[in-house]
Length: 121
Image 1 (cartoon, rainbow, N blue to C red):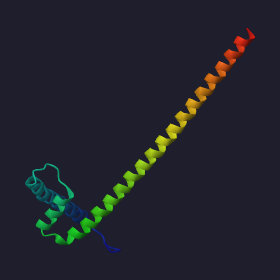
Image 2 (image 1 turned 90 degrees about the vertical axis):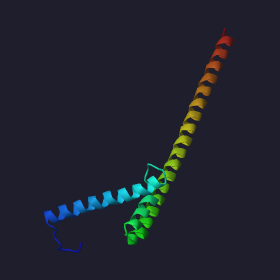
Image 3 (image 1 turned 90 degrees about the horizontal axis):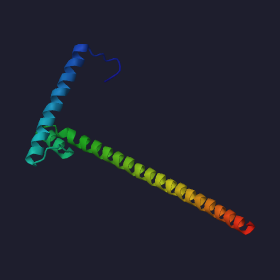
Image 4 (image 1 turned 30 degrees about the vertical axis):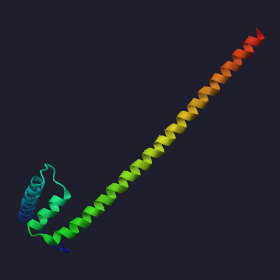
């Protein structure tokens, strides 16, 4: 909205109700496309098809762009999580190797002490 524009409570309420009706109608139309595809889950293509059926073609291109941005972000997050998990796994492996080496060192020291005690006896 431009600067200095005020909206009354009634107008806000009307806009909110209109948005709710629009979302319900779009969902209903998208659901019809899912049912035609013998699916129970709506997907992005169902929503895009619903927009065209509802004669909101001018929203299809911006929605596709937003969907691509969202997918890239999700892919980036997923890859970042994988990288983090790999790093965590390698750190855990390094720690377990260090612990194994420490255990081996302790065993060797104990054996050396036992050998020394046997020699002393």
